[in-house]
Image (tube, rainbow, N blue to C red; front, side, top):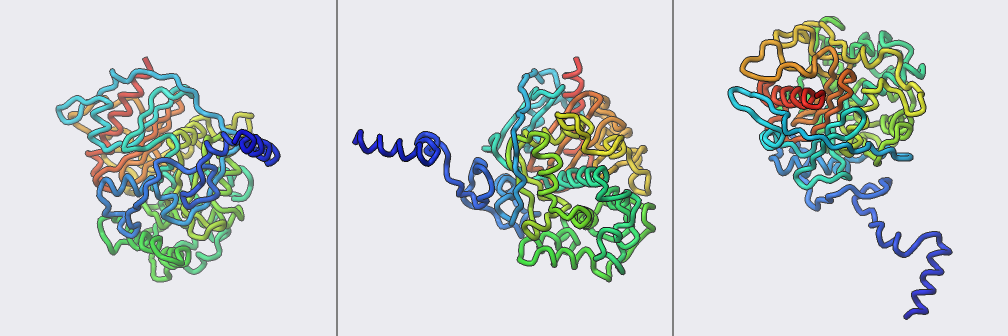
Length: 437
């Protein structure tokens, strides 16, 4: 027996690995062999993706952390990881008032179905929470937080010269829109969702454009199906480009498609080359792909760990500058991205300075909010919010040197602003004020 073990050890040395290392490295059986390791937990039964908009809470938990293997995907590989240092801070004093009641962080997590949260202050993790079985290796899907990643990659393409100007019409880079309602829309207008092209984003209507997009995703031939939906010759404009704001995942999909045609690379590949590896992200991620290796969805589908969501926020907070000093984004890009457009419907009573930038939101406490506190902490001029349905969030405030990440399974895809979105802005104000002391 001893002789056999010795022979096995010699064989292992010849093959360049140790028996202990081999035993410690589980086989990649999660359906995505390009991943260096399988994210945990590995759920065995996944909910049907065609029913995504009507999943119950537990189905959302499993579905959101299994999105990377429920659809075809392109892996963006981590390089040399640079983990975020941990400097824990107490958040016991971080409380907010909401309609006559005072709540703290633990209350907030329970009330808002939070499944993961990370607070990064001055470049270090001040607080982290994993719930519902999630772990530091879990890949959680972004929903529309992915839009903010795509708009950032547009900035990289402008810096690189692949896109000459944000005021170029998208037809210059994407000839497929010629003859459609999108033809004379500019790159900037796509990012600001001011295309003026009709798109029904209603998450409760099974006949909406967004619902039809999810059905395309649940079947084969996804790229051609979504392309036909978005570029339908019957799709009309309701306003001149730039005049009116209306949230559009169809326009966001088209932005991603246009970016890929301009760069000649999939979103995953471009993200890996421009940000993921040079910024030292800690784990591989997966982007929901309509044509693996060629086209990833620009409207959502970015899957990554909680820490790497946070590191992306740090990349934005640090103005798109890499650790070696290389600037990935154009000068003033991050400031411009949170300069809220003033088109019709973007300006509201609650947000008179505008609601939307370059696929980043103004989610500050509305100026007309009543019976709530604190209303200050993360002011709209300094803070940008990446938001996805059911409560996915990245908040970035360079002035406070603060990034907050949230994973959640809200009961509604898009609740009233007076519900979960308002509670988030109050809680995050409280965290910012506590950590500023």
